[in-house]
Image (cartoon, rainbow, N blue to C red; front, side):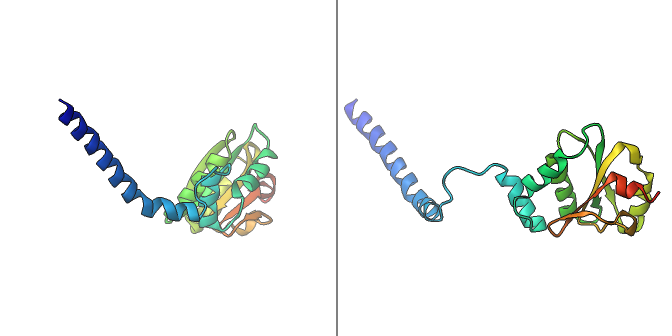
Length: 160
């Protein structure tokens, strides 16, 4: 009976030693690069925004803009229907725009202006254009990095 106990303990000690030996090549470089520790707020969304639109602290910047918008109006996010990263960027903007009502519209550059004109301007606080160039009628927007443009609803609605 004692022999079985010692073999059991030896087996688990050997498995633990193998686990440690296999983990060291991964854990030590992570510790040296200081990747272990507390994560900043909005770390994930900031990483995505930085990678897709080259904007630093994008979550905070977009959050500050969204805080200035009226709560009783919605936001329309236009994304390029032919570009999956544009759609992902639009979903990030929609996530950050919470608690506002958000509509994501898949569009193409040739029909974008028609889709803007089809929106009810009184109920829209603003338009986000993600990886799609706003039409000339929606000029004067605020650029967030290289791929996101925000145009207030009153400016884009004034040309209609």
